[in-house]
Length: 455
Image (tube, rainbow, N blue to C red; front, side, top):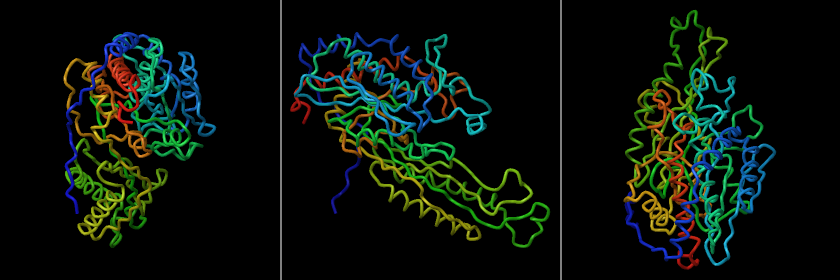
């Protein structure tokens, strides 16, 4: 059996100098990146509500925006509620096709009946699909940073390429898809197939493809691998009781208290799982994300079952089957620790992680672009447990680099920073910087012959 190599966290950047003419076009396109246009685009996009599985209006709007700046663009319906948008800036021929991609769906419905109090006591301004610019020039609104700010980065790049009239050999594809959030559609939503990369998978499987791609997601720098995930339902079982005499009933156990013991044991195991599976740019964690049990309208009758909903992230260097095996080991260990507790589990969703060779052209070009735009050596990427559409794209055969802005922590109100604080706050200068990185990568890749970029 061949020895396994340790995945890298850093790779040397291979230089591929631009010609004088290519550099002139690069500078012209970089100068065309407009903070004002990106801001206006983002405010409008945030104001179009697009919860996972209901992105049609936003995608139709995106297609029209791309047509307005001169792209060969169209709306790609997935069903009556959902769809994607793609636009082509076509070159003269002989070059690579590069996809610049961002998802556009949001993680909450903004429905008081289904979301409160689970998102908090109330909907904050950064949770509402009403985009606006604050006194500091930041765009505020539902997913103004993640993912709609990332879509603005893609728009800003292709807008600049077109307005600079760069004579590409290859083709740049601006692509936006729904279904990107790590969610499954809730029972009240008609579109039951949304989430977990469904939109971009449909897009690629239905004709929108490329030689390689860049996805814009959070985290400064350039990365070449992301996690997948496994979702488990753990059921702790017992007997239904009656509040009037449960504590005096011989042998009766509270499934709620038993479930708490199981939850605490799983929390311990998450740390072991992380140590065992961390490698390269991957630091996979798990979380207990939900608890369900009993009748809210019948507290007199303690429940016979409590369900724990668990997300376990899967390394790009492993498989969902291996994560499931390790989870089964953990459950067996908890059963041995608490033989009196009846525990069942099932895996109800999985999504494989994936990686791209860090020496591939698109990774190297993106790193060169990062250094050129920032004027400094590229920063070391912190190992991550965040799941994105990147793995879906890679698993469909397209080499891909992940780029993005830093978290907008310094521009986010302190009371918004916990949990998902920052997803609804976009610091536009950071988005402009990512647009410029994408411009560099597009010109570096599409002003050359295919052979020069390894095709």
